[in-house]
Length: 138
Image (tube, rainbow, N blue to C red; front, side, top):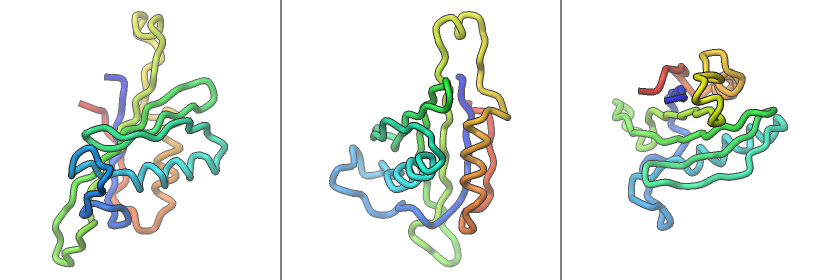
């Protein structure tokens, strides 16, 4: 897969209340997707689409001449403080490639990809986000 995952922890986003428009009761990530869309738009990034899947929410993003799919979802983590919305969030950053790039095994996403760097920078700027890191997708 041509993707990398960015993970972080916070209690800022909803992980406890299923909304009536969710595809399934655990379809969390709408507020994270909207927040990230706003942060990217503030930086002049084109974010033409925000949507929902049965596993979470996604953004379609264009940065310079590159297109990305950003999928996001979260899982709650129980703590001694028992904050109902504390959890670990995952943002899957998939770089779209042309057929020629795919066949030629070119333009793969790397650890220093401009979209990964930008998202990590945005996340690290938030004082209530912890354990921000990225890893290769399985």
